[in-house]
Image 1 (cartoon, rainbow, N blue to C red):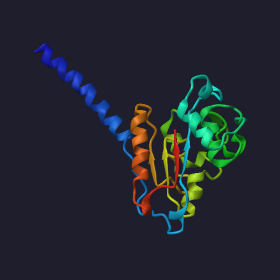
Image 2: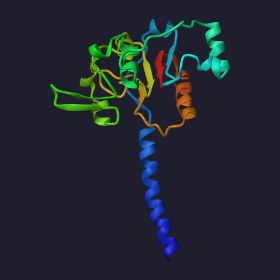
Image 3: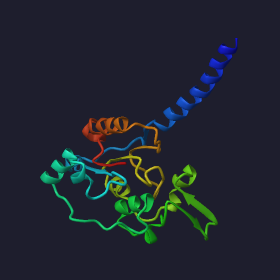
Image 4: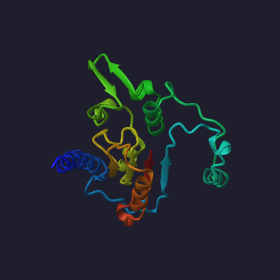
Length: 203
């Protein structure tokens, strides 16, 4: 009897955990969007973030695929991060072209005197509130031109910025395996031309 009771307790704990994971792992899609005919002919851009990947890691650890991409493509000699050089301000700077002092995300967590509120990367309500984000991220610019976009966990992509979200996106879930994230990108690129995203951000 005690053993059966223990099984019930364990199941009661596991099932909600799987439920929470599956809910955060669901793709979110803005219905009714299509690429315009002219945009269907445009090239594809996938912006990939390897957060914390130091400039010399590819050489140091012989990342052969990254080195091959650099050899065949274009490689910057250096990059100056925005200040502070932490995840949220820098990632949002990359997609807006603005300094943190101009786009509003001045740290991963900060207090706003005018709002009398704190923004924090761990507060999902704040992260999904578009009023915290200034500037125009690239996916908003793309969607305004009838070019569909998609985002896998990029900073700001969960929020309604200028009343626009990427056509396809996921709410952040650090439990989602990298292979599952890659599979989602592959599925986006296998969409019909009308609904295939041409600009993808990947974290």
